[in-house]
Length: 428
Ligand SMILES: *Cc1c(COP(=O)(O)O)cnc(C)c1O
Image (tube, rainbow, N blue to C red; front, side):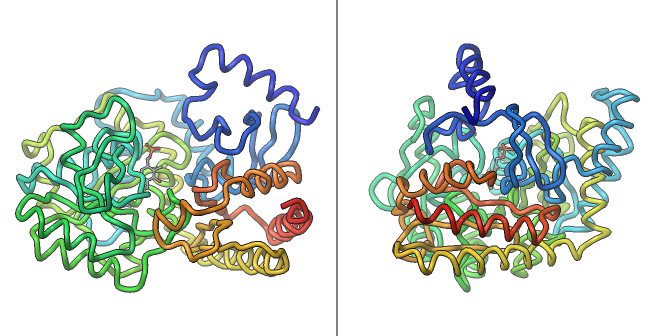
C-alpha cells in the first residue's frame, strides 16, 4: 500500500482532531482518499511518512517562496529560540522587520503585526470602519479573507442583495453588513455604492485572486475600484496575504501601480511561522490603539521567534529581487509546458497564471470570476490530482486553489511535472 503510515496516522488523527486536521482543505474532502502526512521537507521537495518524495507546488500555501527549510530562516529561528521565544514586551527585531517592510512596500508608513492573515483582515476592516465611521463593507464572491465572521458570506440572489452566512454560527446581523460584488465586474460594485450611499467603509479584494483558483484582475478593474472608493469616501483594502512579497517586493500595489489605503499581509511575511500584518499611511494607522481609539491587541503578536523568521525572509527577498523574475519565468515555463500537453488532450481546460501563481481549471470558458471558476469539472480534477500525486507531484487538493511556485524548483523539476501530466492525461 502506497500510503500505509499516512492512512494509519489519519485514522488516529480523526479520533482526536475534527476531521483529522487543523484546517479543512488538508483533509482531502474535495479529492477523496486521505491526506499524506509529511515528515520533512527541503527546498522544493516534501517527504511523507511512508518515505515517498514529492515535488511541492503548495509551499505551505505560499509562505515558503524560497523553498522549504530555507537556511537563513532556519538559522534565524534557531538562534533566536535559544534566547527566549516570547516576552510580551517590545523587542528590537519588531522595529527591524517593520522598517524593512515599510521600505519595501509603497504607500505605507506604519505596520501592525498579528498572528495570521485572518487576524490581519479582520483588524483591517475594523480599522476602516473606525476611520470612516461607516459599517458596511464590500467583498467579492470567491475571494477569501480568512475565517472571521464578516467574510464568511456568500451571494443571496445576485451580487446586489444582502449577503447571507455560508457557515452556521455567522449571524444575520453580521452578514447584513457584508455586501457582495462580482470579481472583474465594476458595475456590480457601482450598484452597491449607489444603493448604500455614505454607508460603505471599505472594499476589500485580493488584487490577484487566488482562492477561487488563480484569477487575475481584468485590465482597468483595479483602477476602477480605486476610483469608485475615492469618489465614495470608502477605503480600498488590498488583501495581499497571498500576493504580498510574492508578486514583487511591493506586492500588487507595485505591480499594478495602484495605491491601496490599507494592505494586509500573511504567508510570506512570516517565512513559515504564524505571522500576519496590516499597514497603511500614518493618518489611518493613528486610529489604532494605543495611538487611537480602534482596539486591536495580541499576546503573541510580534513575538521575536516569528519576527526573526519574517525578517530573514524579507531580507532575502529585498537583497535578491531577481527572485520574482525567476519565479515568473518558471511559472511561464510550466504554463507553456502544460498547454503543450493539454492541447492534445481532447477535453476543455483553462490555465490562469500570474507571477508565481498558477491554476489549471477543467473548464470550458475562460475563468474570470467565481461563477466561471465554479463551472470547472471537479470529477476530472480528482483524477488529475490523484494521478499527479502517484507520480510524486504535490498539488493543492482542491480545484479552486492556486499553486504557489517556490524558487527552489528547478527546470528539471518542472520538466518532470510536465512529463507526469503527459502520462496522467491518458486517464482523464
Ligand atoms: C490565506 C489567506 C488569508 C488567511 O490567512 P490565514 O493565515 O490562513 O488566516 C486571507 N486572505 C488571503 C488572500 C489568503 O490567501
